Image (cartoon, rainbow, N blue to C red; front, side):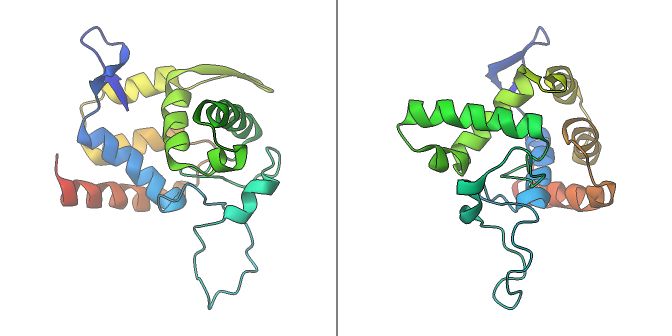
Length: 182
């Protein structure tokens, strides 16, 4: 993830510290359990005795639909503008990496690259411009503990958030900090 340089600009030459990474990973854990092929609310009628929480949903990829309100991937891109931007990015990545679009949509590295791209670029959505750049820059400039960073990221970078999940996101970030330190 690109960090802030000494001039306060987002730069891929600067490494993001572990507290910020833990805050982002805490979001990902709650959203998808780190599964790039997770489709939220997909196939809820799946037999629960087989898998109580189906995080791997590759069968959703061929029917990926920007307007279906199903969250997709690592951070559960859900709203049409963001899903369309992900689709456009994945299409370009499929060509660049010589893989199929279906492979690109479910690819961990494509989604991580898109997460960075989305946080550091603006785009024109159907409802107007979408720009997380300023919020991401503010997030990177914060020198707080993981819990404050996790809450800020949630409040400013997650669209249509479920506020009841904030404690789980903070707990996931704490577990990462406890496990790997900072």
